[in-house]
Image (cartoon, rainbow, N blue to C red; front, top):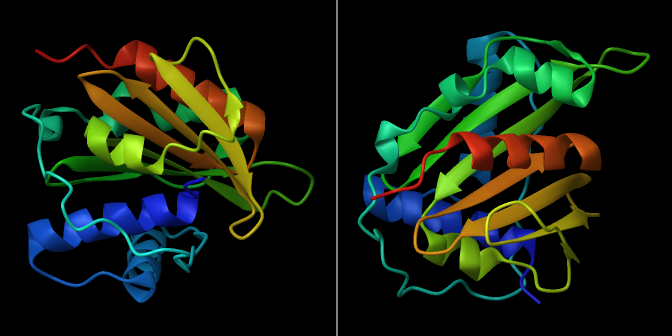
Length: 194
């Protein structure tokens, strides 16, 4: 079983190699803090506690230029808010870090209107495949294969979907239904690669 914690660590190692800097759990927290400061809204901070060492031989690229995909534009924050039953709590933040792109959405909902964070990542299949949790609930209709799990550590759902030979998609979020809806919408909206 490969946990979401290891997948986050693999993502961070790829970013480290591409940016020639070291990003550990404090780096992820700093990124969350940076996103929170730039949107003037609260952000969740995730920590990473790897249960096994990550591989060091993952290829960086599989040929597709993900930097040409803007997740935040493909899936506007109002669409996300409608999917999860809330209201936007700030502007989405997206970035492209080599072969991995992301978009962070802060959505207010529920009785206390405390914002929930939903994060979508597009990455090479090899990274998504490494973090794919075979013990998770299989989700048909999102890419060629998809799995969703709930992380007790991070208190969030994580969907990993793979479009074989093209891309991997990770969505992390507060609700199962919202996480699945975001993953489904993104996989439908992202055009297949060359």
